[in-house]
Length: 262
Image (cartoon, rainbow, N blue to C red; front, side, top):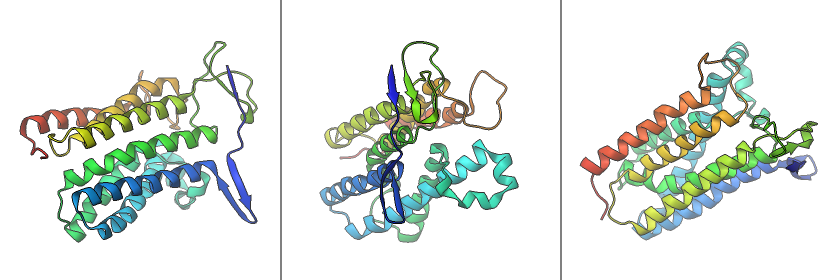
């Protein structure tokens, strides 16, 4: 059994308060930028493209994740109080919406700038650091004592003392973080060591691994939606199925028909 009573605030400088969640979220983007910078340099791509791309990815992530949370998990409240959608500092980001937001951001980027590389080539590069960003975000959730697991009904688990609780819960945030970090390791190995692979394979594998993990971890978590599916599956599980299945089908298609990296 593990007692968790961390302060979600990392430090305060005058009127400025920095939370661990924000630092981990931003830190993931910074580390991801340097990883992408290395990838771009190795391939001889224009570094200026990367700076523009980062802005698109950041905007797509935040806007997509925020709208995803508001419209998927708490639609009744946010449709009745639409101005609350803008109050992102109150928390509430959904990875499913963030995924769609990033894909749309990349699509818009290609339409506007028409870079020298293909959509799948760029997506494969991006998905390596994205897996790391997902890991750090879940660690940020753990620092915030949010996205809680269900009670374990045993003598094991994490007690979130900051919430005034005295019973253990499944460490769902850490379970997801571990799966996402393992995904980061797998994708990094494939990207840097497996040279002959279908373009888009890494993106498809990310979808399959991340959302398969989500599907199996969701039953250990408190339901985040303010409504019920009236089935044995949670909202998070049902949302994960098309992403995981789509990733699997895309991998199969790319192996059979895809254009291979050299």
